[in-house]
Length: 258
Ligand SMILES: Nc1ncnc2c1ncn2[C@@H]1O[C@H](COP(=O)(O)OS(=O)(=O)O)[C@@H](OP(=O)(O)O)[C@H]1O
Image: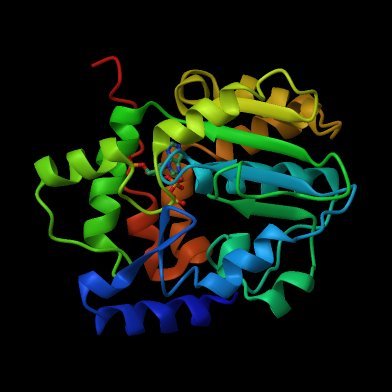
């Protein structure tokens, strides 16, 4: 999916009523324009490769942060990255069945619940990022109000109720958390938290590189973490995310302990 495809869908969303924006697939809500049913069906039968790296995150948990970190780690390690034409990280559910088969890199990404994505044929290594639900909810609330593909205009109170009952895009945060909790000790799965990365990003970069078998020098690790702070990523977001930069890189705070 190219940046212009995303912009076209956003323009279409601006002419779509809130009621039409979401639909339910297998009991979970999705934004219709970005994830039509044929895309979700294609994801269900997607074949993975041995060298694939899968990045999984419930919305607003730090997905774009990890895309940036992984891309930088892979660039330092000399490994091919995701499609360069794309300014936003292409989620597999945004591709149609034809485009899903065309692969230019080994990094695959999704917000979809692990019970729904069945990655056949091999033990793909997966990085999963979680964030505390309070900050995730606040971030998702602002995102919904700023992103035309999602319904907007709700009060915080009504959005809170929807989030708690899982009536938001990609379903219940809590269902995702429970499903991944059972996979925590799987050797092919690494679970990181937004909060731990905020506390010590350099250590997080070191652990992620080691998990994926990328041997970076201490200088390279420092370089990746220096370029992956919120301020650094927000500053370069016009290049990486075009005019969606300010929507994806909003405040980047960890309010859990305040
Ligand atoms: N480098 C870095 N450091 C810390 N925090 C960061 C970083 N990059 C993005 N963010 C914050 O992550 C939130 C967006 O989450 P996602 O990228 O998962 O959003 S999305 O679901 O893909 O739309 C969103 O959080 P909020 O600011 O609270 O809305 C972003 O600001």
